[in-house]
Image (cartoon, one colour):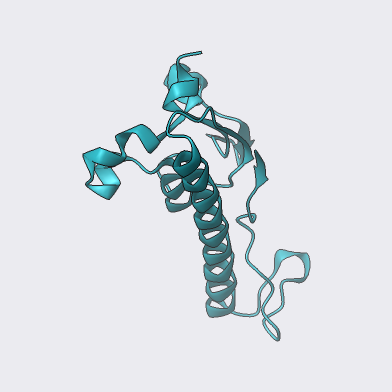
Length: 134
């Protein structure tokens, strides 16, 4: 699957501006940012539901999801897709965990873009454990 989740840019709020990225109030910006975050988490939830459906049909499914998640590996959207045992508290779900392939890249080289001079990893390839062995 290929994804492009909602950007980190705040969703425009009527009456609050956002022309040229200038907001009329910090509260307006915060509301727009919150809405964008919720959209991104909702999209990640839907993606996880599709992944679980694939695992329901075949517990050894070879699954790869690639694209712009607009989140770091430890932010809620990607955590929802990953389904780590540490988060679910259920070791029985271990075979359904999705693994970020960037974990095989040395940390100083682990980024997909620079934003304001800082490296960020917002683009990911996550795979099912059965696919990871390949």
